[in-house]
Length: 113
Ligand SMILES: [Zn+2]
Image 1 (tube, protein in one colour):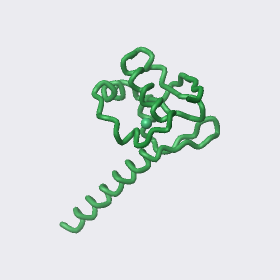
Image 2: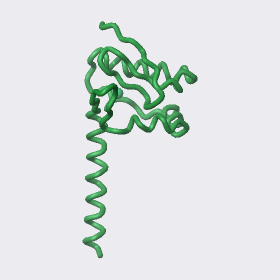
Image 3: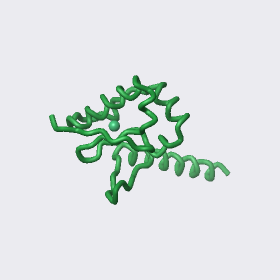
């Protein structure tokens, strides 16, 4: 297994960028959640497939996200960190899915009028 360092940041939840895991420092106050997220990122780091798709919904994470607006940045599909562009395929698919639904609903609504 590769050596992976932890970098505490003030935004998002967690991202693996290069050899490092960037994790929101607010998570340090939630050791249980911190551990769950680290386990998730370690799955990414060890190259497991479909890690995000197979992750079950987590109420503790949901509540944390609601309470910490800095975490909302996690749901952007594309980030720029240290002049490098980082993108999340999962988030790009999710956003495309949501946009497709909005277009579909607008189309149906305008067709009904
Ligand atoms: Zn993930």
